[in-house]
Each structure stands twice: as C-alpha cells, then as structure tokens.
Image (cartoon, rainbow, N blue to C red):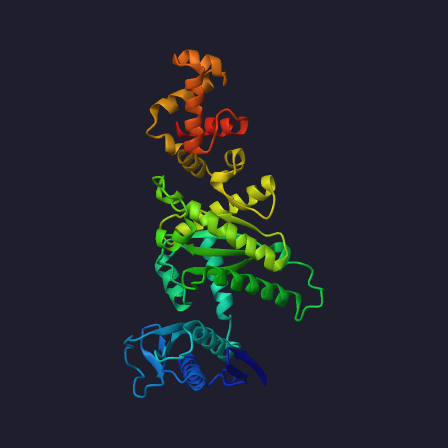
Length: 408
C-alpha cells in the first residue's frame, strides 16, 4: 500500500475497486466505481459527494435516496469527470463554507487523484484524455462542436470562452536524455516533465478554469488561454488603447506580454531554452485550430530567423512572415493588420505609394508630392509611429511594400 499527501490530508492508496469481470455490465461498473468514489472522498473531506451519468441522473450519492433522480445543482462545488469503459459521468464534490474549509483547488486535486486511482486500470487516464482532446482539436481532427463541448465538459474544460492558443516548445527540457538517473521509464520521465511545465503554467496564470494546458507531443504544450479583455486586463499596460484592427488581432499585445513573463519563469525553472509562439483569436471552437496554425507558424519561423528563448507572433516576424507563411488568407490578414493604423490617413498612404513608385528616392518623392523634404520626413515619422514600421529602413520598407501589394 502506497501513501501520498495533499496538504494535511493523507491518502492511503489501496485497490478499492477490483478489475471488471465478465459478469459486470458497463453500467454496474460505473455504479461500483461511483460508490467507491463517494465513500473515499467523503471519508477524506467530510463533504457531500454525488456522481451523475451523462444524462444528469444520480448514480450514487452521499445523500441517501437520490439515486436515479435528476441531479439539482445547488451551492458551491467542484466537478471531476469520470469514465469507466464506455460509460461517462461526473463526480460533484460539495464545498463547505465554514471557516477553515479545504480550498477548492485542494478539493479538486484530491477528488481527481481518487478518481484516477479508481479508474486507473480501466483505460486512458483523465490527463491522457485531456491531452488527446486538445491535440485532436488543434490539428483539426475533430470538428463536431457539440461533441467537442460534450467531451470537454466531461473533462472539466470550459471551451465556451473566447480563447487563443499559446504554443510552448519545451523539447530541450521534456525530451532530454532520460538516462540521467531519474525514476521511471523514459516515457514516464517525459510525462513527468510535461506535467511539471503544466503545473508551472497553471500556477503562473493563477486561474485553472481560465487556462487549459495540455501536452500535445514532441516536447510541445498548448495553452488555450481565455483571451477576452477581462482575462488579459492585467497584461495590457497601454494608457490609451488603439482601435482594435479586427477581432482576430484583438488583445494580441496583452497575450504577448503575458507570454513573455511566462517564458522568463519557465526558462528559470527548467534551465532550458524554451520558446513560445502565440496565435490570434478566431471565433468558434474550431477557430482554435486556426489559432494553433498561427502559433505554430510563428514559432517555427521565429525560431528559425530569431532564435530560441523568445515569444514569436505573426505580427513580429518581419519579412519572414510574408515569405514563410503559405496560407494566402493569413498573409492578407497580416497585411491588413500592419496597415490598418493608416486606414484613415490617406495622405500617408499616398506618400508611401509615391515613395515606392519613385524607387524609394526621397528627393523624387518630395518633388512629385510637391512638398518639402522636411515635410516628407515628418510624414515618415508619423507612419513609423502609427505602424511601428519606418519606410526609411530596408526591412521595414519591404514589409510595407508587400503589405500594400497584398492589400490591393
């Protein structure tokens, strides 16, 4: 028998539930596991516990006489998904409100550990299922939104919030040589390191429900970060926010600042060269796959042209974005985004068109526009201030020129 602790709570691991036998139906196995769950959790925490099936009917409950009835939610609680073979449900653990009550996070962690123990021999673990769902969702392998939401709900993941993808490349840390004396097989060590990164991510953002993080393989982790203004307000230090240039680019600035702070922490904790790519927000559940594509392209191109230990986004890749991104729609979106600060500045746009038509010759441009060279310099300063791109610098000029062509 093994022992583990969560806070001041001691868990004695023992085989509470024997393996299934041919005489037990799937429904009977779910009920058996449910009864074991409410017994163990109730014993450890002295709180009400209820297990419901996918139809919302009570399978087992610490409140006698509720079995078979529709579950009625009331009071604060935490929910842990439960799956036994083909049967699925939820373990709902009530939270006590008196002084000194166990924190919700500890209750959730304890309940998840107990459930994991009970179903450990019955198929994929909860962590594996979360990782698989996120992997398949981001790679576009599943597109049925009701099915995705249903499975995510069973796994305790809220996908109804607006979310964008933050992609972490921690391969140097996660996939490092496993012959370093660590416990367990090479695969177990990989999983342990991936879970360490996930714990760091959730701890950094403070709110587990706000941040979904999963290991998707090859040393990479994906964060589905709630990206609305409320969830990113603490990362946006701009005194006067510019008008947002389309929903897909909204809050990208705050996402970058949050990712930069996260990157510093992860690099310090692991001592490894970690890199991050950030994706734009795209509407809908399946929009997460597009956000992932953005993040992956930014990460791959950014690491190739700018190196590791950086946060890479499409809007900061420079000329590499227009050269390396294959998707024409993404390049057109990027072009529109880069030039959007000039949408209501016809004089500045006209100046750029004449400048490029004059082979970037400032004297010729000023003459054709019938303005003084100093006025032209003033206009270039305004363009640089609004877009972050100065047409007097070669790389910036190339980006502006490509953006103009793509937008046309």
